[in-house]
Image (cartoon, one colour):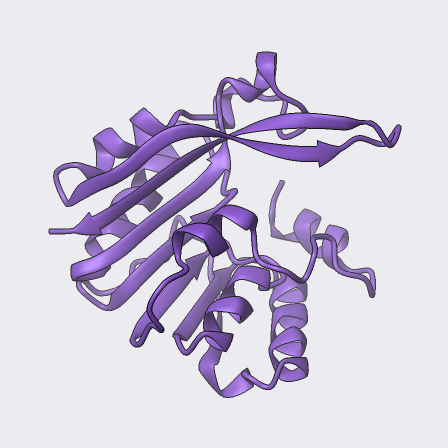
Length: 203
């Protein structure tokens, strides 16, 4: 899907995703009150970026959908953190932040063909200062056969180990594993999705 497709998907007045942060983002980034600069890569409607801003981060929310970023800005205003959220409209293939800019880089459910995904992951790693945090959550490759929902194209799925291997030259890997997430299907039944989670500290 290109930016026009995502604009159309986000165009409704309601949020496509919930306003609350992803459960794994909230879990992994809980702890002492943070300070510094964060980037939410492929931020969408901003649920994670706004949550980070509420916790005290100065956040760049990067996405190629202008409609999604408008909704992120509105959500930030509703939550009273519009001064700490900065929207950046950019195609991630062209987005190249300066090295050592951020204290946190977050990537949540960005699903690209692996060569393109690897480029984004490498740029994310180099954009973080020494001692900063790298966090990825995404649809795991195992979800296709053993989980529920998510993309059905195996070419845009990956494993935690694939991501960790790419980040190891830049960071210490604290956690790299497949995690489970409960989801409710269209039929109202409960199912389990499989996600890849990688949490690292920049060296």
